[in-house]
Image (cartoon, rainbow, N blue to C red; front, top):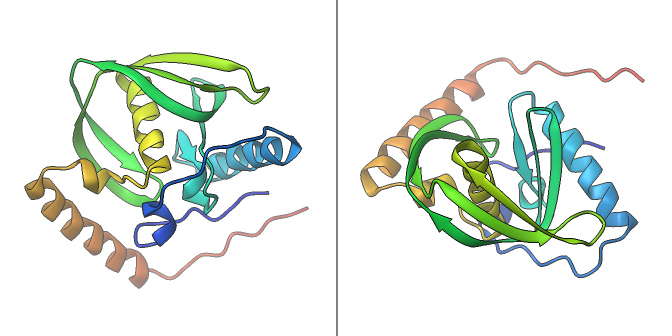
Length: 175
């Protein structure tokens, strides 16, 4: 089942997510639902559970047709610098250059409860950092300089006004 993606202003996006204490069928279904939600977004490559209103430390992503999930992820090492234009499903149509470490090492659990370490550089490193930020109530706006934030907030408001003015198309789902 696909969920609605929460957008900026929803308080769930600013809250700290809880660690997953037991990996069971309910968590496996949630991961499946997160992938379905991600794929229905048509533009996202990753999703954190708080973005669908679930306050659990779970992240899914699909880069190069290689879907992955990590539970309770923690960045344990980072180095370098990398500026990249970042977007977010919770801030639709907004893209801003953000400076982050280039390389990260992340530790967490896979869907079977096994401890895993994932290394990522450039885009993969950015995806991991961005989604882990969501687990701690941190949005792109929080990673911007004050001038960037002011300009991005103005642009986001403008995008929201444009979207609100457009007639909404309804998506029909055929069974």
